[in-house]
Length: 179
Image (cartoon, rainbow, N blue to C red; front, side, top):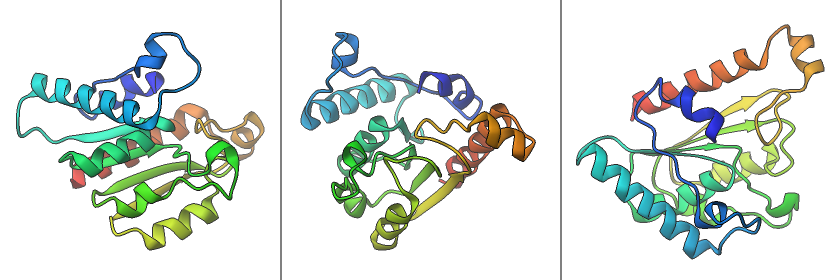
């Protein structure tokens, strides 16, 4: 997410957070309730800085996007952007993390790579069809879970990763502007 911070600042104010397990140098993430509490605390801190009434879009990479969805169930936000949503726990297609998506009422933008084993697009489309929230999908051709496109794919398409990232940012900007 840190590499996206600078890009996202082109759109608006950006506040980032490190979960406690990250700050403490632990590899294993905290349990879901602790992650949600840390995310909500960071949201409250950000709102205290920007003041009431400022639009709020939660943007997260992988687990940060998933936790952002949980926070959006409890907090008033204008939308959620998930960069590489981890739909399948550990890449196991039988272990879906979709309940929060089905419960979500906030608009959501998924940015997903076609090579992302944690979120196969066929499964995401099935979940999106059953969601009550407005959902938008931006597909990164050849993108992995980090939205990186392999060199061969980039060469075949005649583009750079920077151009791919620029299109992602433009998609996010349109989503944010529509809120």
